[in-house]
Amino acid sequence: MTDLLIEFLSNTGFALVDYRNIIMLLVGIIIIYLGVAKQYEPLLLVPIGFGILIGNIPIIKDFGLGIYESGSFLNYVYYGVTHDIYPPLIFLGIGALTDFSTMLARPVLMLLGAAAQIGIFTTFLGALAIGFPPNEAASIGIIGGADGPTAIFLTAMLAPRLIGPIAVAAYSYMALVPVIQPPIMRLLTTRKERLIKMEEPREVSRTEKIIFPIIGFLLCCFLAPAALPLLGMLFFGNLLKECVVVERLARTARTSLIDIVTILLGVTVGASTQADVFLTPQSIGIFALGAFSFAIATAAGVIFAKIMNLFLRKKINPLIGAAGVSAVPNSARVVQMVGQKEDPTNFLLMHAMAPNISGVIGSAIAAAILWSFMSL
Image 1: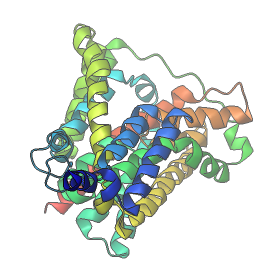
Image 2: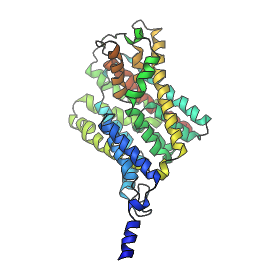
Image 3: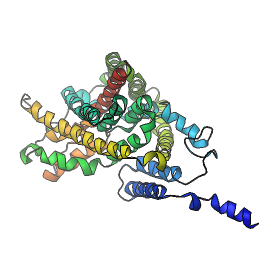
């Protein structure tokens, strides 16, 4: 009886735990705290945080429980991450939620979404310079797009073993947009620039809204065919929304479907951060480079907006350039917040949504370009 009791106790998490598990459990609790108490992207951080707790309960190896053990429940659900099933479904929901009107009303603002992708390629070169192989450097660089599904999509193709740290870094920086972006925005703009008021965008017709996802899909995917899974679903979801005649499908895509996929994606990405896999010097490097990438993307959008003002008759508020990172709609809200701190009557949210939405498209194209080059 004593032997059975000893054997039972030796198989509990209390006996198997080491300091790395404790560290990751604390990380999971902090992420849940940020989602619940601070309300930083709670729909993302709460599932990811609890997934980290699930993935770091000490278990007996080869017992069929761990996310990396073939045949386990978590391993089956993780299949949707490693085989790029979840990211396109997330994009379908985003498309069904998104109104492209502000971007169509003033197409020149799409350039700001493109400018923000400079962070991706700058960090790609930086990661190469410090010794990361090209496939991993490309996956790290995409963090600068502040688009979790796109980061997962590219990493699953190029560097599957880095999905955990890259996904957690990407979603963490998306959640911390209100903390990271404002100091950069204020540093790079004058008060006079932050006070610029932009005129109301023109009204976009229903015909334009219906035609855009079709034309946008064809142009983007002819330019970057590797973006087909992401942008195909994004524009299809938007067509469901705008054509009106399939409201049931659009409602499902923007509610039930995206909610289910977000739960599965968040929990499994969190669970993939097992301490023995996640706590490495390489992961720390990924987080540092991810922060650099995000900062460069924010700065590039703001600076490019200032450059555009040299040539535009109707000036734009440079703050909206920061929304070029594709953390929809969080970065657009931050633009509104920073602008209203200077002038409570200045409403920049709708204008910021144009580069914000184009940033989603831009990051998907950037990922497709990197994937294409790495596959040559």
